[in-house]
Image 1 (cartoon, rainbow, N blue to C red):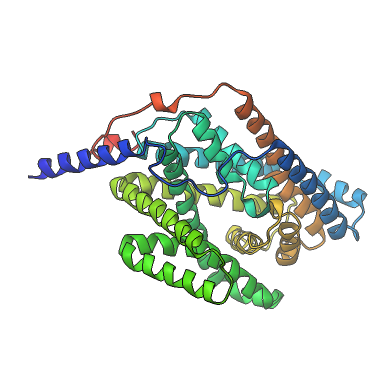
Image 2 (image 1 turned 90 degrees about the horizontal axis):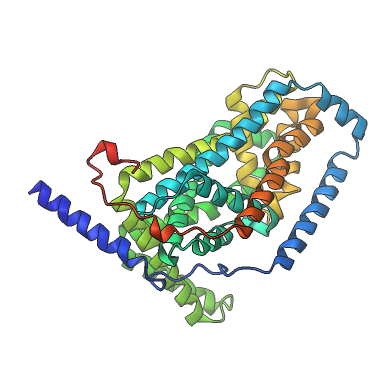
Length: 390
């Protein structure tokens, strides 16, 4: 009986995965069409101007000579450790893409998944609210012969897991440091929860589909109707069509998670590693300046709150907000080194990575497309431990 049920589950899963090869299996996420190069160039120029203005405002009371002098005295081993954390970030994200691809029975190499990770980071960095990253990851997967349905679900699994980890980490770290945040400025608490609510909304959608798709659809339709009544939404039919599209995407994602529970755990662990690696960079910068008094956890917790809070601001790469948040919330830790520390931390975690990822994104655009459609794998049983990552 157990073998019969397993065979039936495997056959059902095979039918579900095969259905994803039809390009109209899932509605495309809005904005997934290739954007013009000119718009990205303008975004890049705006980013550079925003960076220059940010550093001028924040460091106007600190001379460039003082910043350079402070940076020259840092411990290079801890600086290298910070860069190693960012390497870990990209390796973990690439791992997540690879395991998610296995969920839809497609094999991707480490080099391929690293390219997608870099493309996402670069385009997220040059577009407001990181809106360009996922569409460009989708574009490159489609260019590499992955069907629309499969590309959408790979990104869904990776990003919904990231939303979950970010919300969970944000809540835990905030509970640990709420007293410190209130001592800095009470309004930061409101900004933190507003930002967290956007990420939490995505998880509520997934939970709604898993619990009761019908109830979720009724609730969202009622919200659309109410928003139309108060004249916030003008095109009700268009809004309802988007609701249908999002529910279809979440339905398929929930189905994929059900078929790949073990792999989803691996992606969850990889996402925790990815997130902690990027958030740990200031910890290494703190040690690079030879400072003490704050523990690794203290620094990590406060930087998590900074990261969640500044994601609210619709600026490319959160430039301006990220630097200001770093100075405001970590000023007590770094003291007189706060501006050089902010410069070094952002240099490691963002500016250098943008340069590297920009080169990788250019390579990904110019190279010959891969053929993921030809790299399919079988449907191993999840009850076999040796096949968990296959």
